[in-house]
Image 1 (cartoon, rainbow, N blue to C red):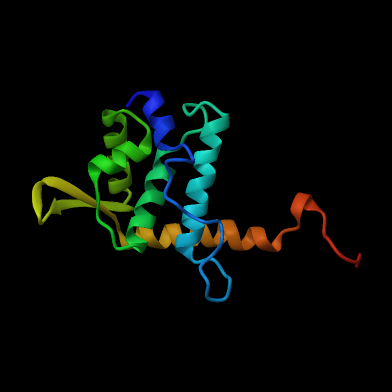
Image 2 (tube, rainbow, N blue to C red; image 1 turned 45 degrees about the horizontal axis):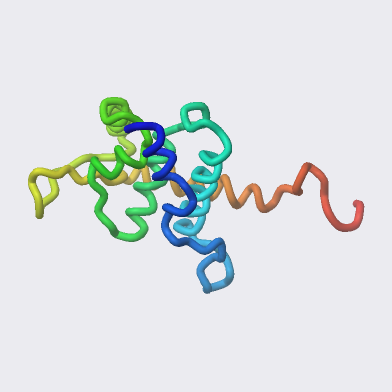
Length: 153
């Protein structure tokens, strides 16, 4: 995929309409909210840095698969290739490695046998859940800039 297409795909204007506000319940963000927020942050990075410098297509793919799973939305290989921002050959190699690591699986689309549906395995879902929780829940406990706010101990 040409670099300009990848940048266009990841520009904030083209990302799903997502409010930074978490789902209503307890004002606590869901894992889906956290995954979308991470995806939006990655899209913003692409605005400021060359995509080929700050790129980890495996992470982009795993985020997209996690979001699709949370929304019970099927995702085909072609969509995952677009998310990666890489050439088809490179993206397919990355998908092969993720599948060999038992993080995702491919299967034939029952409604269109020409397409392959890609989804997370249980191991992939568990890894993404743990990573998102670690990324956001441990960050919320940390003081910003390494300094505690409030009264000194």
